[in-house]
Length: 161
Image (cartoon, rainbow, N blue to C red):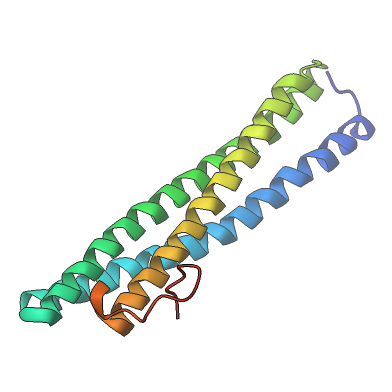
């Protein structure tokens, strides 16, 4: 067991890293949940538009709704993965204190939890970037109509404006 504050201070200093990580991921989660809200709001607006429209307008709205549905699912996955990362970071802080308190030498367990934290964060960011690409597809659809109205392909197959 720890017997003095001098023994505790280095442990607290070590635990500061995961605390900062939790704070950063919290800001990322805030951004993701705001984006999720915007996708949901946009989907509701498009659904209302599709219900009172017909023809090409309805077709475009339905196509955009399909894209927004996939976006919402991607953002939900990104939020889940970021939340798992926060969970691992919190577990890491607890492990740092428990192993120090009982003078256990479980560096492999701490390393495993830290790796899980970072892998979840990386996966969350990768999914979030995929969502950003989906939003570009929705914007392209909105700007240029359905697939046959899109601008001509550039050399190399890139059709983005």
